[in-house]
Amino acid sequence: MTKKLWSCALAVGLLAAACGSRAPGAQPVKSSFVPQTVDFLDDVGRGASIALDADGNPHITYIGLIEKLAPGEIPPARPVTAPALPAVLVANEKDGLWTRGFVVQTDISAPNLPKIPLTASSSTALAIDGAGVSHTVWTETRGLFYSTAPKDSQDFADPTAITQGYASQPSIVADGSGVPWVAYYAASPDVHGRLDLDVARPEGKKWTSQRIGSVTDCPEGATCPQPRTAMALLGGDPVIAYTDPASKSVKLALFAKSTGAWTTQTAVAGDVGYGLSIAAGKNGLRIAYVNGSGNVQVTSPPGRDRRATPRITVGTIQASNPDDLDGGTAIGIDQGGGEFVSWADPGAGGLRLTSSADGTTFSAIRTPGTDNGELPSMQVSKDGKVYLAWYDSVNQDLNMGTYPEELGPIAVPQPSTTGSAAPPPTGGGGTCPKSDVTIVADPGAATQGFKTTQVSAPTNKAFKLCFDNADTTIHNVFLFKTQADAANPASALAQTPSFQGPAIEEASVDALAAGSYFFHCTLHPQFMTGTLAVG
Picture 1 (tube, helix red, strand yellow):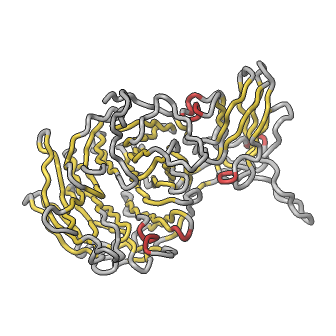
Picture 2 (spheres, rainbow, N blue to C red):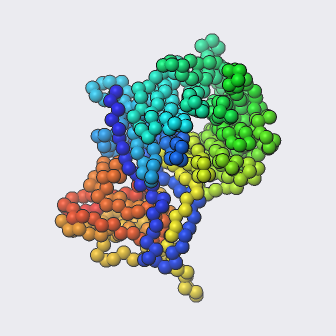
Picture 3 (cartoon, helix red, strand yellow):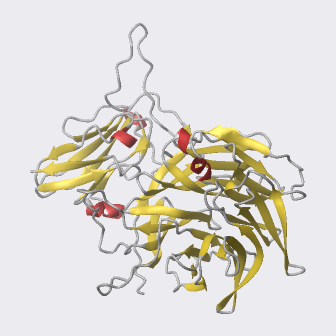
């Protein structure tokens, strides 16, 4: 399979200053949580897994599927250099730019070749070792596969099979020697309804698997948590948390390097185990999960927390049915022992995020832009910055949010005049010159789109594009020759910085030939689109 890199420079747009010189009252503002769309072509983002390299840069692996269209819908235009779907995709961010590529893609070099057997239930897991090498695994209809890429590269090696039997819910860590350990469920060849927990690692060019436990799958007609595995490193040794669906319990498997043996224990028993995740910090292991009552809980396995912290409820889920409990949790711990927990809450409309300085008292963090989010994956950098990736189940996009972000200086409007009601917002911090081509975003544009969706400019004459952002959400405008070109932001004919309103920003546009041009906000490309007519 030819490995042709597909790169796409996406502006993160988190550090751009608004034009405070054109608006009164500019002052530094800290934004708690800033979301962005990482990939939006077709159905992308299922089974996402995020990891950070030694410099704190995020890397995400995820599944890309061909979007299922409703009758009458037109498929999105795809660049010819984009990966052929289905595919296992990868996106890396560095210095404010995203680069997207693939681990494996469907071979379309000849007609009627079979597609890679990826489905909506396929998932990925990613780890980056101390040398910067990426290790990723993924599940197909049958089989669990592995590939690796060297530091600062997306040229992944040809995949190797860990198992070609049924496998699900993989997780992965890379130990201090750079050796990957992979945990997964395998269908028992001996007992119907039993799932075996296997752990695999490479020995030479082959993988060896060891069976370290088994659980009972959910009986037909019963309501049980989806079986999940989650891995962490404790003292350099791998630890596996896993769900026992039928007993609704969380179990733990620990490896002792001194003996080379695995031991298992029950971490939490009874009516628990939805959306399992695990992290290790200076105080030991921490497990996040949801119980049958919809309580999001964090606990430490018996004897595995030097603080002896009791089980803590950090939030609740507004569940209308048991499926609402299984949207996933994610937990991360910073170097100082601060903890962050996220979970999917369909009843509340998206993802929730909470934090604690010591793992005992948790405070909620606002998470705008996480509507329809599910299956969160989290990492926390050495300096305490949270990277949260998730799948938007309605728009079928891969998103990522960061916390905290500082966006100063930001222009703020002057106070309203005493004695009269403030007029409704009609523009940002300042006024676009009449000679400019003006594009306006009103409050709520992230889901309602630009107020100005059709603008015009003269033929063969350079002009200024002015973006009037009246919204308190961060937006930008990128102008392209065609909508298909928008898949590669680096091909933009012009662009404004990403900034929070109310404020305005201008961009210079070279003379354009007569025709129709496309523009959108790269942070909210599903809704914020428009057309520039030149002629």
